[in-house]
Image (cartoon, rainbow, N blue to C red):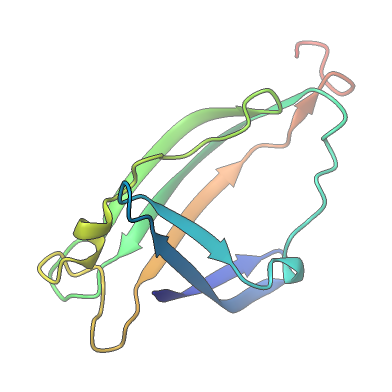
Amino acid sequence: MTLAIDVTTVDGPKKDKLILYQSKSNGTISMEIEKVSEFAREIILSEQNWSCKCLGTFRIVSQKSGVADYRKEFNDQLLNNRTPSRGYANFISFAELMDPAKGFYNKSEDKGTLASDFAVEKAKTEENDNQF
């Protein structure tokens, strides 16, 4: 299944595809983003300790009138180089995503919309913050 997404980068909005694969063994969803090189940035803090606070929302946009978006919010999440992953391991089940009554998947157009809104403070490093 391919979902159409809009990605907004520092260079402006880009259209792309998000491909979801259902794992037959446990029903998890993994994602592959095509053309990452068009908007990816080098991680410049990989050689030093860093941390920053982040807040935001992950959501699946409703494709059905009168149905609210499926959303999860996070506030004051501390990100750092010692914690390799953040997010939701079980954001939504594949069955729930594809359930026509839920309204997240538009079967006639074979599409859905994932969105993420977030704000991240400037990273603090051992070099720029004595309180690190």
